[in-house]
Length: 100
Image (tube, rainbow, N blue to C red):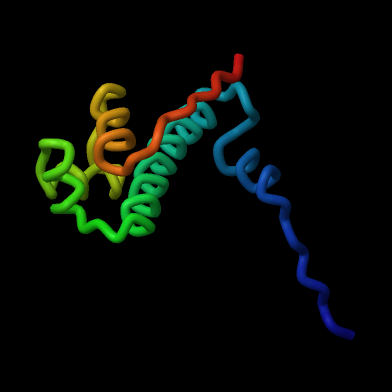
């Protein structure tokens, strides 16, 4: 008789690893994950615009190294800088959502 693979839901996995929604460890994970997502979103948008990190940096008056650090979640980013990268560098706009 074959053993069946037990598939764990993502939410259950996160609960087990980081605790329930209001647990401090879970909140820290969520904050870090949001920062990670910003870097990934910027990298994907940059690539869709066929821009190198250096080209994007030149458009917004920063360095290739800084763009790389943002994309790799190695640097905090100021909101004004994020808006400038999105607006001036990528020709887009930032839309925020606040969950309370």
